[in-house]
Length: 509
Image (cartoon, rainbow, N blue to C red; front, side, top):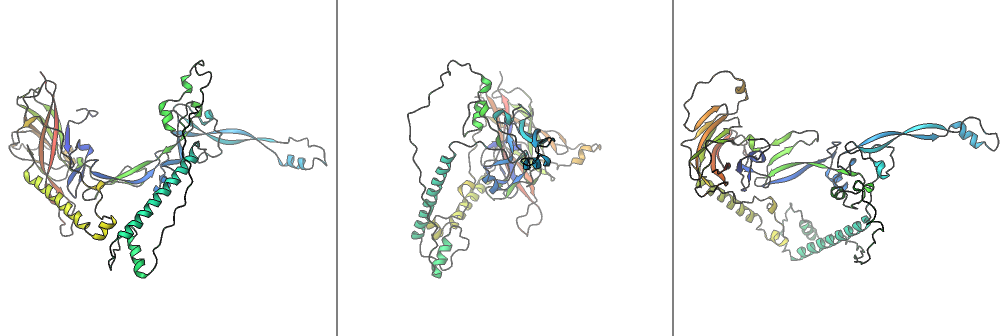
């Protein structure tokens, strides 16, 4: 298959979404396949992709997630570069200053009263479309970074007033809610919890000591005027229908959306925009809350401290070809290549359906998690205050049914087969291995790769042009080197299952 084409082989993750193996992650603690929807995304750091400056989260929030030194071109959205130029400056000499001070007493000095010098100035220029800050009348600056003026919005004062008003409303509602929960709370326990984060524990301790409850300062009222609709609309220019239009002087939709504050219609009113910050994110399993992906903190590093990609732990299945053209109701065979990415041997079985005990274990685990959450939140104080110590709804694993339906029946393999471990040194080994008796369904074997033939029969109800989809369950052995307890210091072997769907092609005449 081509690198640019979508992969015909897709795996079903634990939440039921189909993805190719290069878009999946593997949790070694569960152990299960995870996709981008069944993991938690966390921001590790903010940085600028141009100057590679690492910015703390509080500073990035204060700067509105924009870099203070880098700018984007308002025309083509490329990065602007600072260019230096020299400007002639007239500087008066000391002799001229002395002559001016004693002009009333002595005659004018024959020497020149000023000395021409040059001063270095900077302006921003785009190397792609040749746009410069001089095109919109921004004066040159004496420093290359940090002194460029921002285009102020006409409604900035109104926005700031609205923001202060709604912050006051939110603070008032929060205080009213805390006061309501304090009144309805039951009689405090003799030993309050020391892990309380809502402020209720502090209130109980102050009451037991005999102090008065510490009340939050009341928010100051903000006077805000309501917006009024008006029917007065500014008239159009007199020459709007007679003057010819020059499209080079009119901004495009992308240029207007890049400056949402004023959305200029003329190119001469475009101002450079501060470059948005990038982030490095880490991924965490929703079920066991262990890290799956954790990058390095420095922006210049592309390595990972933790990288649990599925392609490094799960056998990779690649579709090679079908032996015959696809016909409805006719038996056919497909060639599949299996690759072992781990350093341990794997025993693989191809089944038409997952074993029943796998589904029973999954249901029992979900029921145990539900009982555990109910036990944690059974405290009357927590129920009355609305505080829960269980995981939030956004971090729970959501089960979905696989929407993909198979329209072909496969013939399970006669027996299981062993997939050798990955050994990069064998690629350069010239020793010829002795022939080994292989099962009939194995076509060839080399190193940690095996090519096998899988028999299937498309549904007889398919019509010409319909896509044939195969589905089977791959059972493989995985050696887990992670030990959750101190007693188990040796790696353990697990029998895992993965549901695989393959788009074999279309029915032909």
